Length: 307
Image (cartoon, rainbow, N blue to C red; front, side, top):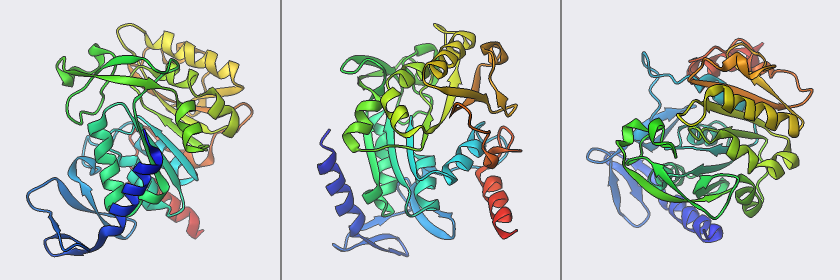
């Protein structure tokens, strides 16, 4: 991947956007991107209207808030350098850029179609100069090829066929790299890392040890049970990784240290926060329950700032 060339192209496209006209984006060249017959819609965030792919619009209606939305956003608000591993269509990447004009963001996804949506949103709205993109499957074994089960921009694509039922057996071949390779190539040292890789959590962590040692980031990991690895086995691998890297795992549902993998063995999906050993549980997360919305977290933060 020629990162410098990609960044130049992204910046050029971002500068082309001049204003929002009545029928779409008016470009310096006089071209018009309409909003009615394609996938672009208006979305207001933090008092500003953005033009985004409708697949990236966050729905906070009944049953639509994801388990980790509140936790992820609360942690993003306190970060300066955010790495989104398994970004899909970039809902959190867009939020991260819109919420803080100085935050640096890097996005990784194995599905190039989903990553293209992420990049398009950030380019279109003028965030290209502080964002990075890498397409590939994160692993501890770079330079290999894996079968990645997905279709279109399907959320939840996975290297485990049983864990991506929406793909209905459809797949693509994807090359592997490590988080360490990506971060070293970008000179990028995150203070927050979100890992959502549908069953390949510990492999991603094994391939991130140099990055973790350099920046000691907070790491939010979405844990999964897959056919080839139970939640107990997966959690134990992450517990062992923490022990070997001077980290401690916290179970977000109970706001407590994960002292044993058995604490989550009955879960099909859960979320752990990995913190440098000796760290206190982040104040920003206290009282945030599973499926708390981004809007609720923002309202809480605004109220605290006014006190």
